[in-house]
Image 1 (cartoon, rainbow, N blue to C red):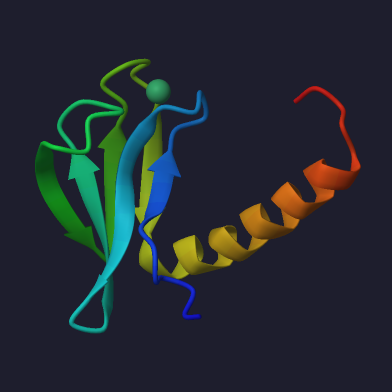
Image 2: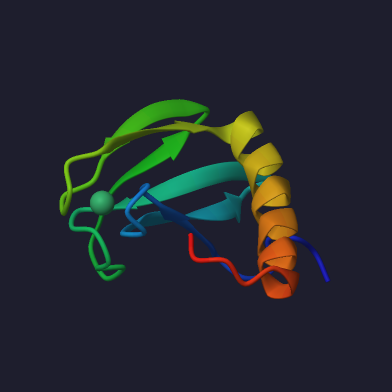
Amino acid sequence: MTPLAAPVVWRCKNEHVLGHVSLIDGVRRLLVYRNADCPDDVSVVLTGLGVVKCSACKRRRTWHAGQDALEELLALRKERRALTDNRDS
Ligand SMILES: [Zn+2]
């Protein structure tokens, strides 16, 4: 199974889904939703670097293709840790 077989959702700090990461033509791209949590309406597709503002809570999050790959790994580790450690986050 390849890491990007399924779309990877990209959230703001308040867990609103801002978009998802997709591998298109071998390049990681962030498909940004016009409105948070509404995947049917993609407003912009980012590659490389960009800043996305959450339409729900107005928080900004920086998209960086290389850093995203790293964060994805860290998030996976965090999820696994959460499974064994049930503190409230
Ligand atoms: Zn938000």
